[in-house]
Image (cartoon, rainbow, N blue to C red; front, side, top):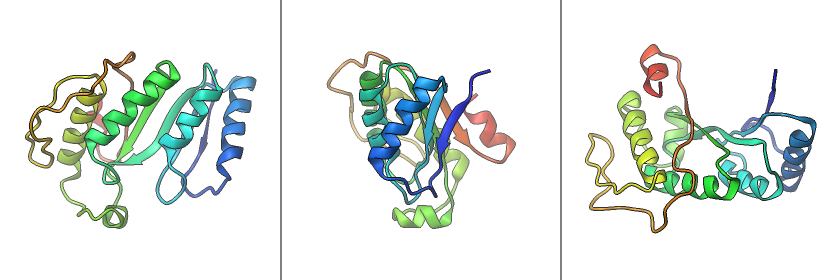
Length: 171
């Protein structure tokens, strides 16, 4: 059995120490390192640094709140980390709650529809597809496409959710 390690969003570790921890976790055989968000250090930044100092350990967000950045931005970040890491991204997302949505200027509404549209846009952007999305919650405008062809256009997406519809959403 392979185990993973996670630093949740309530943990306050110095960023350089986190990278050293990921290196150690890889060395002793952990399968993945997961980093939460909320009001702590940014997972994608730390995972990018970890990608440059590791070779095999998977790198996961646990979880990124969909109110914190646009789906196009996260698609770009995901494609970039996939290229930097050699395809080791595990993308964990969540719809958060009213407080977290408010921190980012959002209104917590229609979580299932919001998550469905968000994930669809992230996957298309990260795959290098041309995106012209007109959803009920998200619109990307005219013709967005990455300026490069991603080396690793697909990755697992995990969705934090409590209800059966939310857990079915990502398959």
